[in-house]
Amino acid sequence: MPRSPRLALALSLCALTGAACSNKQKKLSHGGNVMSQVYYDVLGGQRDTSHYYSVVRDSHDAESFCYRCGEDPYLVDKNVEALTKLGGAPYGRLEGQANTIVLLIEVLLEDPAALARSQAAVSLTRLGTQLPRYGTRGPVDDGSRLASGIAEIQGVYASGSRPAYRERLTQLLTELGEATYVPGVFAKKALQLFGTTPGLIDERDPAVRTALETAIVKTARQAIVYGLTAAVEGPTDFVRADALRGLKVLGEVSAVPAVRQRVEVEVSARVRGEAAEYFARAGTPEALEGLVLLLDDMDGSVRWKARQALVRFAGEDLGARRAPWERWAKQRWPGLAFPEQPSAKPAAATAG
Image (cartoon, rainbow, N blue to C red):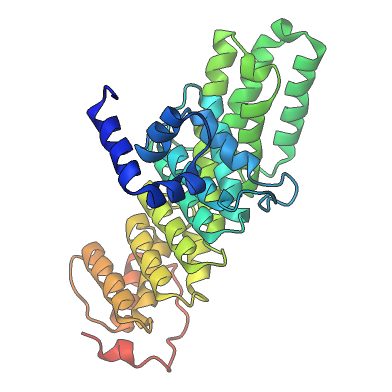
Protein backbone atom coordinates (compact mmCIF):
# COMPACT_ATOMS: atom_id res chain seq x y z
CA MET A 1 0.00 0.00 0.00
CA PRO A 2 1.52 3.37 -0.97
CA ARG A 3 2.52 5.52 1.99
CA SER A 4 1.39 8.78 0.40
CA PRO A 5 -2.40 9.32 0.33
CA ARG A 6 -1.92 11.48 -2.76
CA LEU A 7 -0.02 8.71 -4.53
CA ALA A 8 -2.62 6.17 -3.53
CA LEU A 9 -5.35 8.40 -4.92
CA ALA A 10 -3.45 8.84 -8.18
CA LEU A 11 -3.00 5.09 -8.59
CA SER A 12 -6.67 4.52 -7.85
CA LEU A 13 -7.67 7.10 -10.42
CA CYS A 14 -5.42 5.48 -13.01
CA ALA A 15 -7.01 2.13 -12.28
CA LEU A 16 -10.51 3.60 -12.68
CA THR A 17 -9.70 5.71 -15.74
CA GLY A 18 -7.04 3.67 -17.45
CA ALA A 19 -7.65 5.13 -20.89
CA ALA A 20 -7.15 8.71 -19.76
CA CYS A 21 -3.98 7.93 -17.81
CA SER A 22 -2.64 5.85 -20.65
CA ASN A 23 -3.23 8.69 -23.08
CA LYS A 24 -1.40 11.19 -20.83
CA GLN A 25 1.53 8.82 -20.45
CA LYS A 26 1.74 8.35 -24.23
CA LYS A 27 1.85 12.09 -24.77
CA LEU A 28 4.03 13.38 -21.97
CA SER A 29 5.73 10.46 -20.25
CA HIS A 30 9.51 10.49 -20.39
CA GLY A 31 9.93 6.89 -19.28
CA GLY A 32 11.27 5.43 -16.06
CA ASN A 33 9.68 2.93 -13.70
CA VAL A 34 6.01 2.97 -12.78
CA MET A 35 6.51 4.99 -9.61
CA SER A 36 8.49 7.74 -11.38
CA GLN A 37 5.93 7.90 -14.20
CA VAL A 38 3.12 8.37 -11.69
CA TYR A 39 5.06 11.04 -9.77
CA TYR A 40 6.21 13.04 -12.78
CA ASP A 41 3.52 12.37 -15.38
CA VAL A 42 0.37 12.06 -13.26
CA LEU A 43 1.10 14.12 -10.14
CA GLY A 44 3.07 16.76 -12.04
CA GLY A 45 6.34 16.48 -10.12
CA GLN A 46 9.19 18.79 -11.18
CA ARG A 47 12.10 17.12 -12.92
CA ASP A 48 15.61 18.53 -12.95
CA THR A 49 15.90 21.70 -15.05
CA SER A 50 18.51 20.08 -17.30
CA HIS A 51 15.93 17.44 -18.26
CA TYR A 52 13.51 20.01 -19.70
CA TYR A 53 16.36 21.81 -21.45
CA SER A 54 17.45 18.54 -23.06
CA VAL A 55 13.90 17.75 -24.18
CA VAL A 56 13.65 21.03 -26.08
CA ARG A 57 17.18 20.89 -27.47
CA ASP A 58 17.00 17.27 -28.57
CA SER A 59 13.55 17.49 -30.13
CA HIS A 60 14.84 19.80 -32.87
CA ASP A 61 17.30 19.33 -35.69
CA ALA A 62 20.42 21.38 -35.02
CA GLU A 63 20.58 22.71 -38.59
CA SER A 64 16.96 23.34 -39.65
CA PHE A 65 15.36 23.51 -36.17
CA CYS A 66 12.54 21.32 -37.50
CA TYR A 67 11.25 18.55 -35.26
CA ARG A 68 13.17 15.33 -35.58
CA CYS A 69 11.37 12.46 -37.25
CA GLY A 70 10.91 9.40 -35.09
CA GLU A 71 8.44 7.03 -33.51
CA ASP A 72 7.09 9.50 -30.94
CA PRO A 73 3.99 11.23 -32.32
CA TYR A 74 3.78 13.47 -29.25
CA LEU A 75 7.17 15.13 -29.55
CA VAL A 76 5.63 18.59 -29.95
CA ASP A 77 3.48 18.09 -26.83
CA LYS A 78 6.53 17.16 -24.78
CA ASN A 79 8.42 20.10 -26.18
CA VAL A 80 5.67 22.55 -25.18
CA GLU A 81 5.46 21.05 -21.69
CA ALA A 82 9.22 21.42 -21.27
CA LEU A 83 9.09 25.04 -22.49
CA THR A 84 6.45 25.76 -19.87
CA LYS A 85 8.61 24.27 -17.11
CA LEU A 86 11.74 26.18 -18.19
CA GLY A 87 10.07 29.52 -17.51
CA GLY A 88 9.70 28.77 -13.81
CA ALA A 89 12.48 26.26 -13.23
CA PRO A 90 15.31 26.84 -10.71
CA TYR A 91 18.78 27.52 -12.10
CA GLY A 92 21.79 26.61 -10.02
CA ARG A 93 24.18 28.58 -12.25
CA LEU A 94 23.74 31.68 -14.37
CA GLU A 95 25.38 29.90 -17.31
CA GLY A 96 22.46 27.45 -17.33
CA GLN A 97 19.97 30.29 -17.36
CA ALA A 98 21.89 31.97 -20.18
CA ASN A 99 21.80 28.82 -22.30
CA THR A 100 18.08 28.41 -21.62
CA ILE A 101 17.35 31.97 -22.73
CA VAL A 102 19.27 31.40 -25.97
CA LEU A 103 17.31 28.20 -26.61
CA LEU A 104 13.96 29.88 -25.86
CA ILE A 105 14.78 32.69 -28.31
CA GLU A 106 15.52 30.12 -31.01
CA VAL A 107 12.21 28.39 -30.35
CA LEU A 108 10.34 31.72 -30.36
CA LEU A 109 11.75 32.71 -33.74
CA GLU A 110 12.18 29.38 -35.53
CA ASP A 111 9.93 26.64 -34.13
CA PRO A 112 7.42 25.23 -36.65
CA ALA A 113 4.73 24.93 -33.95
CA ALA A 114 2.93 28.18 -33.06
CA LEU A 115 2.01 26.84 -29.62
CA ALA A 116 5.70 26.25 -28.87
CA ARG A 117 6.57 29.79 -30.00
CA SER A 118 3.81 31.16 -27.79
CA GLN A 119 5.04 29.28 -24.73
CA ALA A 120 8.62 30.36 -25.43
CA ALA A 121 7.48 34.01 -25.36
CA VAL A 122 5.73 33.44 -22.02
CA SER A 123 8.74 31.68 -20.50
CA LEU A 124 11.16 34.35 -21.74
CA THR A 125 8.97 36.98 -20.11
CA ARG A 126 8.96 35.08 -16.81
CA LEU A 127 12.74 34.80 -16.85
CA GLY A 128 13.08 38.47 -17.79
CA THR A 129 11.05 39.60 -14.79
CA GLN A 130 13.56 37.88 -12.50
CA LEU A 131 16.54 39.83 -13.84
CA PRO A 132 17.72 42.99 -12.04
CA ARG A 133 17.70 46.21 -14.06
CA TYR A 134 20.86 48.22 -14.56
CA GLY A 135 21.33 51.87 -15.52
CA THR A 136 22.47 53.27 -18.83
CA ARG A 137 24.34 50.91 -21.07
CA GLY A 138 27.73 51.27 -22.70
CA PRO A 139 28.66 52.13 -26.30
CA VAL A 140 26.90 50.59 -29.29
CA ASP A 141 28.52 47.48 -30.74
CA ASP A 142 27.63 46.34 -34.26
CA GLY A 143 29.15 42.94 -33.57
CA SER A 144 32.74 43.77 -34.47
CA ARG A 145 33.85 44.35 -30.87
CA LEU A 146 32.06 41.17 -29.82
CA ALA A 147 33.81 39.15 -32.51
CA SER A 148 37.26 40.34 -31.47
CA GLY A 149 36.40 39.83 -27.79
CA ILE A 150 35.27 36.24 -28.42
CA ALA A 151 38.49 35.48 -30.31
CA GLU A 152 40.64 36.94 -27.55
CA ILE A 153 38.82 35.12 -24.74
CA GLN A 154 38.98 31.81 -26.57
CA GLY A 155 42.68 32.39 -27.29
CA VAL A 156 43.46 32.97 -23.63
CA TYR A 157 41.89 29.68 -22.56
CA ALA A 158 43.34 27.77 -25.50
CA SER A 159 46.86 28.95 -24.66
CA GLY A 160 46.63 27.83 -21.05
CA SER A 161 47.94 31.20 -19.86
CA ARG A 162 44.78 32.29 -18.09
CA PRO A 163 46.40 33.36 -14.77
CA ALA A 164 48.58 35.91 -16.57
CA TYR A 165 45.52 37.40 -18.27
CA ARG A 166 43.27 37.67 -15.22
CA GLU A 167 42.90 41.47 -15.43
CA ARG A 168 42.44 41.38 -19.20
CA LEU A 169 39.69 38.75 -18.98
CA THR A 170 37.90 40.80 -16.36
CA GLN A 171 38.14 43.90 -18.54
CA LEU A 172 36.90 42.07 -21.65
CA LEU A 173 33.90 40.52 -19.89
CA THR A 174 32.98 43.88 -18.36
CA GLU A 175 33.12 45.62 -21.74
CA LEU A 176 31.11 42.93 -23.52
CA GLY A 177 28.52 42.86 -20.75
CA GLU A 178 27.99 46.62 -20.83
CA ALA A 179 27.78 46.97 -24.62
CA THR A 180 24.57 47.95 -26.39
CA TYR A 181 24.23 45.45 -29.22
CA VAL A 182 22.72 46.76 -32.45
CA PRO A 183 21.34 44.74 -34.11
CA GLY A 184 20.07 42.89 -31.06
CA VAL A 185 20.92 39.44 -32.38
CA PHE A 186 24.48 40.06 -31.17
CA ALA A 187 23.17 40.13 -27.58
CA LYS A 188 22.07 36.55 -28.14
CA LYS A 189 25.50 35.68 -29.55
CA ALA A 190 27.20 37.29 -26.54
CA LEU A 191 25.01 35.27 -24.21
CA GLN A 192 26.04 32.11 -26.07
CA LEU A 193 29.68 33.08 -25.51
CA PHE A 194 29.15 33.52 -21.77
CA GLY A 195 27.28 30.24 -21.37
CA THR A 196 29.27 27.83 -23.52
CA THR A 197 32.93 28.90 -23.86
CA PRO A 198 35.22 26.09 -22.60
CA GLY A 199 37.31 27.25 -19.67
CA LEU A 200 35.22 30.34 -19.08
CA ILE A 201 32.24 28.39 -17.75
CA ASP A 202 34.53 26.64 -15.25
CA GLU A 203 36.31 29.82 -14.17
CA ARG A 204 36.93 30.06 -10.42
CA ASP A 205 38.89 33.29 -10.12
CA PRO A 206 36.64 35.62 -8.05
CA ALA A 207 37.24 38.74 -10.15
CA VAL A 208 36.72 36.99 -13.49
CA ARG A 209 33.76 35.08 -12.09
CA THR A 210 32.09 38.30 -10.90
CA ALA A 211 32.64 39.98 -14.26
CA LEU A 212 31.20 36.95 -16.08
CA GLU A 213 28.06 36.72 -13.95
CA THR A 214 27.43 40.46 -14.20
CA ALA A 215 27.84 40.28 -17.98
CA ILE A 216 25.37 37.39 -18.19
CA VAL A 217 22.70 39.27 -16.26
CA LYS A 218 23.15 42.48 -18.25
CA THR A 219 23.19 40.74 -21.63
CA ALA A 220 20.34 38.35 -20.82
CA ARG A 221 17.79 41.15 -20.70
CA GLN A 222 19.03 42.55 -24.02
CA ALA A 223 18.75 39.11 -25.60
CA ILE A 224 15.22 38.57 -24.26
CA VAL A 225 14.11 41.96 -25.57
CA TYR A 226 15.66 41.16 -28.95
CA GLY A 227 13.71 37.89 -29.15
CA LEU A 228 10.38 39.40 -28.12
CA THR A 229 10.81 42.38 -30.45
CA ALA A 230 11.65 40.15 -33.41
CA ALA A 231 8.61 37.97 -32.64
CA VAL A 232 6.33 41.00 -33.10
CA GLU A 233 6.89 40.40 -36.83
CA GLY A 234 6.06 36.68 -36.58
CA PRO A 235 3.48 34.83 -38.71
CA THR A 236 0.91 34.03 -35.99
CA ASP A 237 -1.26 36.70 -34.38
CA PHE A 238 -1.48 35.20 -30.88
CA VAL A 239 2.30 34.76 -30.77
CA ARG A 240 2.73 38.41 -31.78
CA ALA A 241 0.31 39.32 -28.98
CA ASP A 242 2.31 37.21 -26.49
CA ALA A 243 5.51 38.97 -27.54
CA LEU A 244 3.94 42.41 -27.08
CA ARG A 245 2.59 41.36 -23.71
CA GLY A 246 6.09 40.34 -22.70
CA LEU A 247 7.56 43.70 -23.72
CA LYS A 248 4.82 45.43 -21.77
CA VAL A 249 5.43 43.34 -18.63
CA LEU A 250 9.16 44.03 -18.83
CA GLY A 251 8.54 47.76 -19.32
CA GLU A 252 10.99 47.80 -22.22
CA VAL A 253 10.84 51.04 -24.27
CA SER A 254 13.52 50.19 -26.85
CA ALA A 255 11.00 48.23 -28.92
CA VAL A 256 8.65 51.19 -29.44
CA PRO A 257 9.93 52.07 -32.97
CA ALA A 258 9.55 48.46 -34.15
CA VAL A 259 6.06 48.17 -32.67
CA ARG A 260 5.05 51.50 -34.26
CA GLN A 261 6.04 50.17 -37.67
CA ARG A 262 4.21 46.89 -37.06
CA VAL A 263 0.96 48.60 -36.07
CA GLU A 264 0.76 50.29 -39.45
CA VAL A 265 0.35 46.92 -41.21
CA GLU A 266 -1.12 44.77 -38.40
CA VAL A 267 -4.36 43.01 -39.42
CA SER A 268 -5.24 41.55 -36.00
CA ALA A 269 -7.27 43.72 -33.64
CA ARG A 270 -5.99 41.60 -30.74
CA VAL A 271 -2.40 42.49 -31.59
CA ARG A 272 -3.20 46.19 -32.12
CA GLY A 273 -4.90 46.20 -28.73
CA GLU A 274 -1.78 44.72 -27.12
CA ALA A 275 0.26 47.38 -28.94
CA ALA A 276 -1.94 50.09 -27.41
CA GLU A 277 -1.34 48.68 -23.93
CA TYR A 278 2.39 48.45 -24.64
CA PHE A 279 2.51 52.08 -25.81
CA ALA A 280 0.66 53.09 -22.64
CA ARG A 281 3.26 51.31 -20.50
CA ALA A 282 6.23 52.71 -22.46
CA GLY A 283 5.07 56.33 -22.26
CA THR A 284 7.73 57.73 -24.61
CA PRO A 285 6.85 60.50 -27.11
CA GLU A 286 6.89 58.00 -29.97
CA ALA A 287 4.66 55.64 -27.96
CA LEU A 288 2.15 58.43 -27.35
CA GLU A 289 2.28 59.22 -31.06
CA GLY A 290 1.31 55.60 -31.68
CA LEU A 291 -1.61 55.92 -29.27
CA VAL A 292 -2.88 59.01 -31.10
CA LEU A 293 -2.76 57.17 -34.42
CA LEU A 294 -4.70 54.25 -32.92
CA LEU A 295 -7.62 56.62 -32.30
CA ASP A 296 -8.39 56.01 -35.99
CA ASP A 297 -8.35 52.22 -35.61
CA MET A 298 -11.22 50.31 -37.20
CA ASP A 299 -11.78 48.31 -34.01
CA GLY A 300 -13.69 50.01 -31.21
CA SER A 301 -11.86 48.25 -28.37
CA VAL A 302 -8.49 49.39 -29.75
CA ARG A 303 -9.72 52.98 -30.02
CA TRP A 304 -11.02 52.80 -26.45
CA LYS A 305 -7.68 51.51 -25.10
CA ALA A 306 -5.76 54.23 -26.92
CA ARG A 307 -8.08 56.98 -25.71
CA GLN A 308 -8.07 55.82 -22.09
CA ALA A 309 -4.28 55.69 -22.09
CA LEU A 310 -4.03 59.21 -23.53
CA VAL A 311 -6.46 60.49 -20.89
CA ARG A 312 -4.18 59.15 -18.16
CA PHE A 313 -1.19 60.95 -19.66
CA ALA A 314 -2.97 64.24 -20.39
CA GLY A 315 -5.05 64.38 -17.22
CA GLU A 316 -8.10 65.28 -19.28
CA ASP A 317 -10.29 63.77 -21.99
CA LEU A 318 -9.96 65.55 -25.33
CA GLY A 319 -12.57 63.35 -27.00
CA ALA A 320 -12.57 60.63 -29.64
CA ARG A 321 -11.25 62.67 -32.57
CA ARG A 322 -7.59 62.54 -33.39
CA ALA A 323 -7.03 66.23 -34.17
CA PRO A 324 -7.28 67.57 -30.57
CA TRP A 325 -4.88 64.89 -29.36
CA GLU A 326 -2.42 65.72 -32.12
CA ARG A 327 -2.42 69.38 -31.05
CA TRP A 328 -1.89 68.34 -27.43
CA ALA A 329 1.01 66.02 -28.35
CA LYS A 330 2.70 68.62 -30.58
CA GLN A 331 2.49 71.23 -27.84
CA ARG A 332 4.15 68.84 -25.41
CA TRP A 333 6.71 67.49 -27.92
CA PRO A 334 7.14 69.99 -30.79
CA GLY A 335 9.22 67.57 -32.82
CA LEU A 336 6.38 65.09 -33.40
CA ALA A 337 5.00 64.86 -36.94
CA PHE A 338 1.79 62.97 -37.66
CA PRO A 339 0.74 61.55 -41.03
CA GLU A 340 -2.44 62.86 -42.60
CA GLN A 341 -5.62 61.43 -41.16
CA PRO A 342 -7.20 58.74 -43.37
CA SER A 343 -10.57 59.56 -44.85
CA ALA A 344 -11.85 55.97 -44.94
CA LYS A 345 -12.37 55.45 -41.19
CA PRO A 346 -15.41 57.49 -40.18
CA ALA A 347 -16.12 55.18 -37.25
CA ALA A 348 -13.38 56.75 -35.16
CA ALA A 349 -14.87 60.20 -35.65
CA THR A 350 -18.23 59.21 -34.21
CA ALA A 351 -17.06 56.86 -31.46
CA GLY A 352 -17.84 57.96 -27.93
